[in-house]
Image 1 (cartoon, helix red, strand yellow):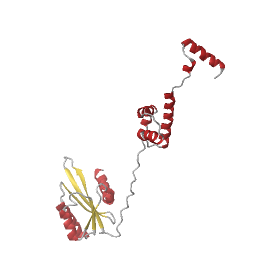
Image 2 (cartoon, rainbow, N blue to C red):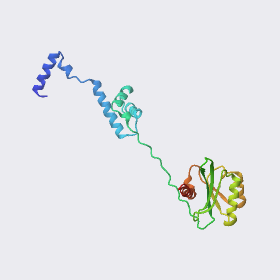
Image 3 (cartoon, helix red, strand yellow):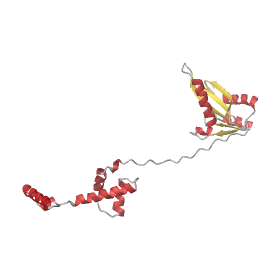
Image 4 (cartoon, helix red, strand yellow):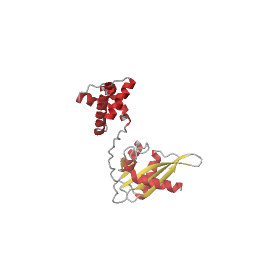
Length: 219
């Protein structure tokens, strides 16, 4: 500080009746708050997932500072560290295994249901059956209701002219997992291959066929 500034401060303190030592005094609390702020900024920069709780425990238990948690939290909020965006946890997604393509026809069929609505508002169901070898459409059944007995009858009609498959891939719908369907498949020597619930990609061939059919009918 130069001499002219010192003279100005001296005159100002004299005019307002304030001692120069009082003017130049820096409160201990203010200094400690700066130290708290420096520590908080350093901790949250090095440990981006730490919130106030972990920062305070580190300062109290590791560094042995005796600062009150309310005081530390007040500085924490003044720095707006409580408004930081927490990084999202990335979920590890397993890469789905590609569906195997059968070497010839009648190895694996896929079947699935679709829903649609008539102009008068009545709901209808569609049963699609394809061969996974060449995605050939083998059967298309449409009605207001398609119970298990109707599904079995449709599959029998296809087998009469096509021959029976080794396995049929389908979801876990009530018609597909019914005892009548399972008993019929066992009697015929056909293996039901049920996909996992909520994973339609495991039945991707018939899902793609359904999309193509829906686009054709809606167009």
